[in-house]
Image (cartoon, rainbow, N blue to C red):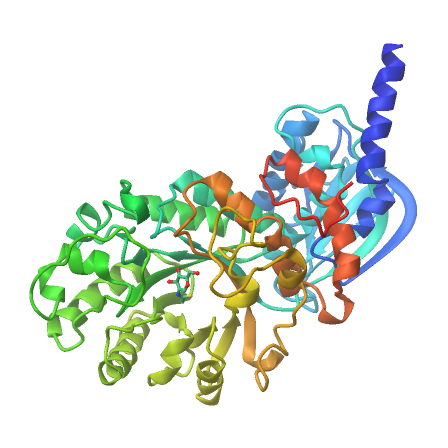
Length: 511
Ligand code: TNX
C-alpha cells in the first residue's frame, strides 16, 4: 500500500506539471528553437558535471549548477575537468570557439545518455543552466530533499536573446531593502535569464550608498524612508558584495544617483548643496518634484564628482545612471547645463551615462542612453541626438502599478497593468520612429513608495517579470498572450517551490 501511495504521489505530481515533454514546451522565456526527440534523460546520484575546458569561469558555472541541483535531489554532483570516466547520466559543459550564438547564446543537446550544454561564453553556459533547471520537475526548486524522478525530455535546443539588455530596477530609496533581499531579487532575475539589475540608490526619502568623502549622506540622509521608518544604506563593502553576487550570475549592476531633483536626502545632509545654504528636513512623504541641487554652485559639482568617482570605483559594469527625471524645482535653463556637465563627469570616470528620458534635453554624450518611461518626444529627441533607448514605458513595465482596482499595494497613475497588458506589447513599435536598432533592451522598474517588504516585492513583481523576461529574450514573431498564458500557468509550481508570493491573476488558467 505504501508503495502504491508513493507511486500515485509521484504520478499526480507529474501530471500536474506535465510530462517531461510538456515541460519542454512550457519554458519561459521561450527559446529560439526546441526540437523534441521523444525520450528521457535521467539525472542520478552518480551523474557528474564535466567541464570540457580549462576555464575557471566555466568551472564556477558548473559548480553553480551542482549547488542548484543539490537541495532537492540530495545529490552531491561532482564538478570536474576530467572527462575520461564519462558514463551515462552526465552533464557536459563546453565552450565553443564559434561565436555565432553571441555572448549569451547556448545550445543544449539532451539525449538519453547525456546533456551537452555548449556556448561561446560562460554567460551562455549560465543562461543554458537556467533552461536545464526549468526542464526538470518543478520540485527541483525545493530546498529539502524531494521524492521525484529527475527526468528531462530529450531534445535539441538552440537559444539566444533578442535584446542584449534585459533588466529590472529596484527602488531601495523610498523603502530600504537589505543585502539578502537584493540577492534574492538577483537570483530570480537570473532564473529568467535577465542580465541587468538597476539599483535606485538615492531619492528624496533616503540616501542608500556609503560615500566616504561625504559621510553625512548616509549618517543622516540614510536614516529615514517613506512613512518615517529607519531606512538604511549599503556600506561600500556590502555594495561590492552585491556587485560580485550579480556578476557571478552574469548580471550587471547599474547604480543610480538621481539628480538634480529627487535629492532631498542629500540636501538635508549638507546645507552647502542648497542655494540658500540651509539644510532641508528629512522627508518621508511620497510627493515628487520639489527638491533640487543648487546647480549654480561649484561645490555641487565637487559633490557630484566625488559621488560619481567613488561609485565608479566600485562598479565594474559600464553604466552609471544619473536619474534626471521630474526635476520640476530646477529651471530648465539650469537643468540643461547641469545634466550636460554631469555627463562629462561620468565620462571622466570612465563610465557610460544612462538617464531617464528627460536627459534628452541636455547635450548628450555620444554613447549616453535615455530610458523611456513616459515622454515619447523626449525619447525621440534622444534618438535624434544619436542615443540608444532602454524601454521602460510606465503604462506597461512599472511594476508598482496595480494589477487592477482591487490590488492593495501599488499606485495607478500610469495604468492598471494586468498580466496580458504587461506582456502584449512590442518594444520596437511602441513609440513610432523608435525601432529595434535604436533600442538596447527593456527594463521593468519597481518603485517602492507602497512596498515595504520582500513579500510585497514578490507580489508586485511576479508573475509580471516573466513576461518582461520573455519580451527581452524571445523573438517578437513568436509571442502572443493566448499561448503565453498557458505556459505561464505551468510556471506556478516553480514559483510555489521557490516560495514566491505571486499574484494569481484570473486571466491565467492556473489549474
Ligand atoms: C515616477 S519614473 C517616478 C518615480 C516614482 C514613480 C512612481 C520616474 C523616472 N520617476 O519617482 O517613484 O513614478 O510610480
